Image 1 (cartoon, rainbow, N blue to C red):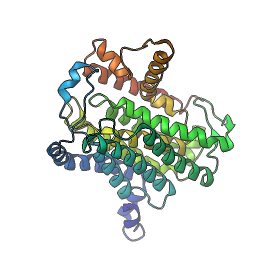
Image 2 (cartoon, rainbow, N blue to C red):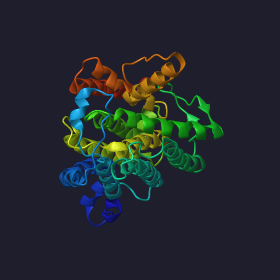
Image 3 (tube, rainbow, N blue to C red):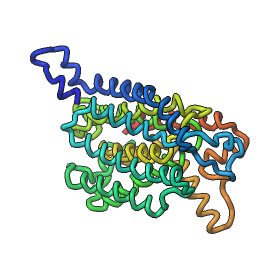
Image 4 (cartoon, one colour):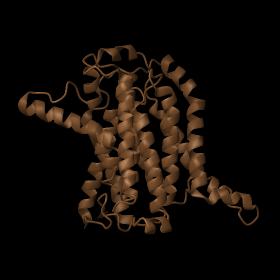
Length: 357
């Protein structure tokens, strides 16, 4: 919005700053942080008054029982902060802006219904698993089909560390991309089980994707690093920095001991947003490296379920993976910080692909 409002370069040269993606991206991050800081205390108090409390699993680590009574649905804060920052600082004429926002809001709405049923309707299971999956597939399919018919080269598949596309998936790109979005959205949801874990990890992913979006959207940088140049994608840097700022602001209140949890409203929306970003900049497979911890969490659940169904044996003490380490004796803070370190390492590996290909 500000890019259009202050498009007065010919008359007031200082407003030329608003044409620079780097300038607007930095302020998008600051805006998102400030929105969270301004709203969080009142929202936490309101959620406490409404008894919007997170239910705690009785079969999990016993230390978690102390979390009973902590407000959830904090993802509303993140959704509001990212949306406001993007609408203020990103180019609203860029079609990618609306693909991202509408998809983001769609995933957030699914998570909101789930949280709402759990908290205000006292339905411990929340939104029926089948309905939740149908909603995720519907939002994902809508986004992917739109991209399939409007974005040139969207079906090309790039592999990390390989310069040229390895295949043109054609119409098969649609089911591939839909499964990726649904899978990554749920992976982030599974990782949101400890104070600050998901919000800290997403901060690393946001920063990494911020750099990647800027490079693939800049013709000279993309050519030098032998990346595919994707016109208009540079604007997505604003979204990535807004995402980073919102998660950093939320982490202030979500760090141990958490004052608020993001709930499905936040985790499903954030996972979906990152997934759509990966499609737009042709990093569909790199997301499995940059978001490596989320992948580990999801795989731990899949392995646990299959092992128990087939052999009646558990691979882990408890899934997702972070609970396994808690039951092995790690403190919650140790698990979170060590997973953050892993997240940082995965992001560095992802950045290495900038040159090694």
